[in-house]
Image (cartoon, rainbow, N blue to C red; front, side, top):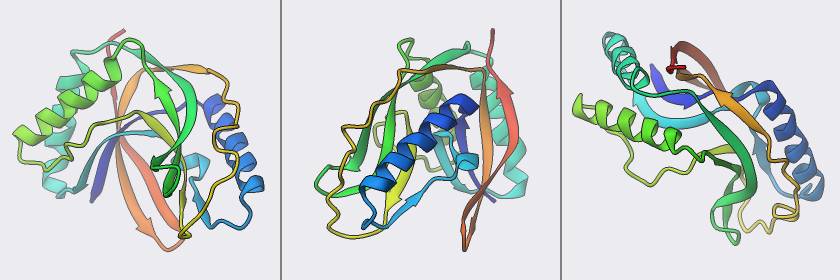
Amino acid sequence: MRLFTAFPVSEEVKKHIIKAQDALSSANQDARIKWVEDCNVHVTSCFLGEVGDDKVEMVEILLSGVASQENKFNFVLENTSCFPSAREPRVLFIELGDSSGTSSRIRRNISEALKENGFLIDDKPWRPHLTLGRVKSEGVSLVGLKEIKIERLAWPVEYIELIKSELCSDGPRHTVIKKIYLND
């Protein structure tokens, strides 16, 4: 099964994401953008790819080991941005802040634990973010991305999620298969 680890997002934050998507959609009606459905909103930490059923329990144990060493923390919504650049936008997102640095440490420790156990994990620098949508048309000049006002809304992160991702014709379907709680 196709797996990744993530941090959850509050329902209040999902409402802000929908508002940002609506504003961008209205301003960019000619662009083909696949918007992330609110049920699929999360903060990805590590993508594991295809994992055999016989390895899932080991992944859960590794995640529990990392979570047992870390405390709950808060994410804060910051600014809208895009990957790879404003001239060639492919992914539209909201940057996240974590003044404690806990999310980056958790991500690094998960990545290291998985690598030590034979998983191939991407070594690119990690920037916590919430994906709004993916641009499907070429040569798009986006309007309004930097003008969107994002309320600096904070929410508590109490656990890590292990998520199964199924690729379907109408988009991905994500199912949380395990929640691994952080310390108080």
